[in-house]
Length: 241
Ligand SMILES: [Zn+2]
Ligand SMILES: [Zn+2]
Image 1 (tube, protein in one colour):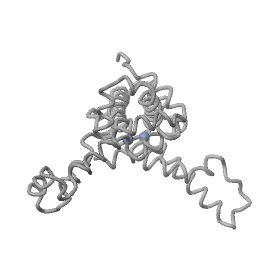
Image 2: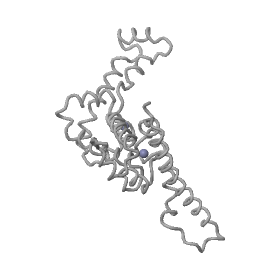
Image 3: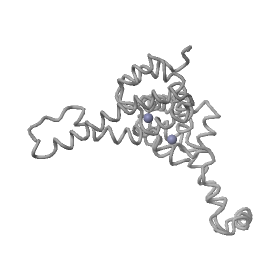
Image 4: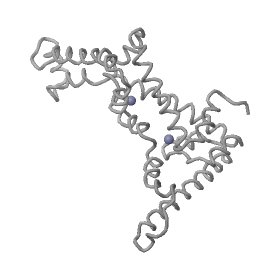
């Protein structure tokens, strides 16, 4: 099968610790946040999307603050803050004819109009972009599940996190590819479970003389990431769905 755009990125990322799809998404998000900060001033569509989403989600907003461009963030965020203030001033209960009209339209809650106007109409730009990138890599993995170059690196890796493994299975209709994916992931998770068990066993005072291996020592951390995804990847998007 002809390789496709992103194939070699996936192959290369499987050689690094953690879920390859999560790692690719993290790298892409860093690039995107960087470009939002530096190109925002000249890109009116990004500007509009940024206002419609009232800035970034909590996870990506805090990531942005780690990027060391305080002035850029201030410039960027003044717009959604202004929008929110305009809404508060224009729709305050009893604050004008528009507000009275909205109160009639939302009789169940006097703050209905404000709530409606304040609520973001678009998802966080970084979350939306992550969803697209994720779909692309999930498809590549599923399309090339029986390609030896892919299975080789997948087998030797930390495996996918549970959410990405589920997504790949959802995208794989071919039974032999599905069996292969399940067999590889089963081996990887079995190894992890064995390491966790060894970690727990060696923590018992009776076995305190046995050295905990490096893999066992971080198995408790790895299982958290394998079950939920790497930090900042899926948790942020779950909050907007
Ligand atoms: Zn993942
Ligand atoms: Zn986000």
